[in-house]
Length: 555
Figure (tube, rainbow, N blue to C red):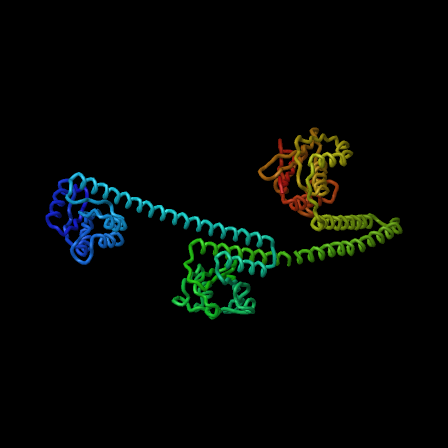
């Protein structure tokens, strides 16, 4: 294996051959031997040697020093001078070509080997250094490119965060669109940005907001939705459209809006609404730009952000309108309930009063049939009065405002039991309140109504069993607290359990006092608290009822 490839440039043939033999004995390969600088340059191009050994004085127009200058600048091949001259001016000129060594004539083998090996080593070391410098430079450039890309990406993300915050503040939609246009153009270093709104039942888009455009265009200029414009093409393609040079673009021609502003490059993307495209977001520049994937994703994110803001704004406007209507209906319903109840109660009171006078004045002349008819009239008046009361009570539950606060359910339960203490004792009922009743978010007064109705209901349907107990407790069930009021009474048959929560529905085979509207009120109050209510019956040995309801554990 050769130790290196060497070109000999020497015009004395015997000196060249002697040098060749010595070099080959040392294990080097002599690629060629030439007598002139011109031939040396030609052979370097053909042979690609690792080293040139060249006499300073040569045949032809160029000497060795001039030839070395060309070799250094063009081929970067190391040169070792062969010389018999020892004059200082000659060596001073030779040093300017940065030679890799000198060999003086007559040659000595030890000197040749030393100079050649050192020259090759220097050259290889310098080439390796150059290679390392190139690789390092490439790595530094790549790192700078990555750092720049990361910096741009971070800047884009900050812009998205800023615009997202602006959108959440719920400011005017036009102000948000103008802010979007300004920040997009600034972040991408473009002169122009536009927000185009698709006009309803039209083939045009309005320049709703923008930055960089000539004065008077924003809010007035329109762009056609046809495929001949970038915005129109974007609207139909439903994906980002990237243009590097509008003059050479073959998919569309432009519109005049872009040509009049000397636009060269740009991006555009659809602003998607829930029922179809709302419009187009676009950004443009007068420079030729190759947009990156990050740039495209950035514009896509801003378009989505703007689309969400538009949907949210429309929803808010509609809510202000599922709210004004509800409030008006609420007022009308409230007025209707109280008006109807008054209009029904007043005639009923008059009928009751006139009937009472009529009965008192004529009761001595009534026979049995007359008395029976009178009792039926009286009972129906009472029934009608109860129905009006029930309607009012149920209606009020839906009309009143609820004041939800953190309350200790144990305190509410104990206060309800204390209020019903006389009924409980007179019916010889034992009440057991379980430990660790939780704090809940509720309307305290309404929750008292719930528990009072459930305990009162339990008292009514206790029956004649010797074991007479009401148990009140609560268990955690996922995200809800599950309360229960359990009794040892007669129970409720399966077919009746859903009906007890309906207005005017009572158990037909049980005679108890009351209007029967209490459980309807319980259901409505619990539903207003985002919970539900149900019955579990029988509880044990075919008897007992457990009324359960849930309240959210946290809000």
